[in-house]
Amino acid sequence: MDYSKIDGLLLKIKSAYDSIGAETELMVEEPASTAEVEAVENRLERKLPLQIREFFLQYSKKCKFSAFLPDDFELPGELNKIFSAGFLISLEEFVDVENSRKDYVEECFVNENDTYDAVWHHKLGFMRVPNGDIIAFDVNENETNPPVVYLSHDDGEGHGYILGSDFDTYFEQLLLIGACGNEDWQMMPFCPDAQSGIVSDCDNAKNYRRIINLQI
Image (cartoon, rainbow, N blue to C red; front, side):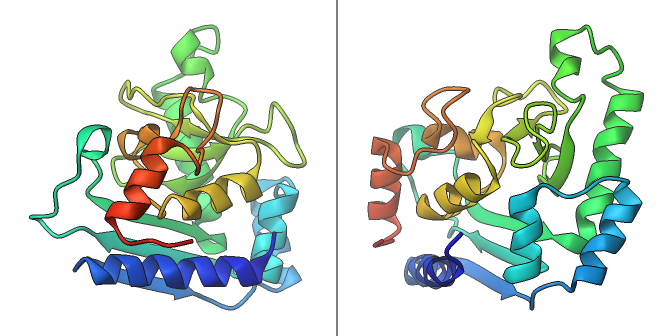
């Protein structure tokens, strides 16, 4: 991943939301040490997927962005459910997020033979969603650079959607659509189908960038 490009995108995104009166926050902490990453891997009892491991080691151990659109800011059509933007990619929270996913599996989605429950199995959670859902890696598909998938705990329409073919693709595409909120209903306008991942050059993405004054 080109981290200098990521830096530039984050600053442009924050500036765009500031320009429409959104309440914004951007935090990019220093990279993690190898010891810090290995401590998390020891707690997980597995290696982190390669791309997010490199993200933590080479870019930031905690990268956070949030923006809340003004109450009177109206979006058209399929975009009208978007009320915020944001993500939190944190080494410190990785284990807790994965433990939350495991708890869901043990308490709610036990039956791997059930189509809905099965989506929760053989994943590695790395990001919480404000509504209680989880964004995870599908490590059953690929251990090294797995796809990023959405896990809904409450029958959300985006349950099982692929958000990116790997972490780098997911994160870059997320930024290129303005880092829209990570609830499934906020991302789905930018996912043409359940397998496509976020597509930053779709019509909805172009329209959204125009509306929030994001020029990339």
